[in-house]
Image (cartoon, rainbow, N blue to C red; front, top):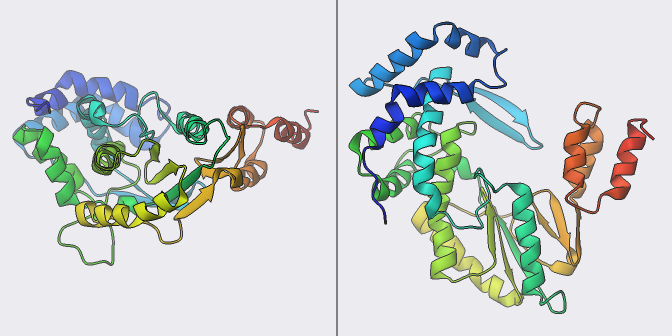
Length: 331
């Protein structure tokens, strides 16, 4: 394993901070907090730079609010200067950890995403079923309250294995410990990552990479696919998937202090349809998930038409496209 040093200096370089600002502000120029920060941009960036070098940087409190996408999520928004730092940290740490991730981890990674994930899983169903001539079963699981359950101490220990830069570890700890979920379960240490932080996406992948490696290299499972806290395992044998469940539950609990959602663990035949990332995969084709379809017809308008048409390109969506055009009076 490659051990990485001198990371803190790369993160805190003025060149890095100004560069990530240019990327960070795109599409946000009309927001008051962004305008206020940019009004005294050099002063704000230099102040952040000096606080980091002096070890005086402290993460500010979060502003919480709720969004529906489609389920209700509690988003925690950091102050602008902290979000700029998150981008600077992500820019340096992501290339370090990215090579350690498995190919079939699709969340928040360049060249991955939902469509790539569904396509890879669909291709695997063809292989597992021997071109749909034999049985294929899918174990689909969801980790219960994943972001709010990430154990800070475990995450920091994982980072230590690869990062030997003391200042960089201090900075990561400052960001990680800046948030603590209101989790009623007793914990030996703080837990939780704020939904909304760019660093949370990276830390989530680093944390669950422990599970990915266990699945791929210890259990030697060939057909495994994960997107954030949702994952699927394919097999020709239903009983094999049933036997896997207690092993998976044990690893998640003992190594990562995570639990599977009791109401979101399913084993389904391919012929019944495998629900993954907004689509349902069936032999020879895929269709749009019913809930996604309903949400689309509820929200679609002229402004977001192209976005939804893009979704329909990835499934058997001709009839749906016709209905969309009729709804908008285009046909």
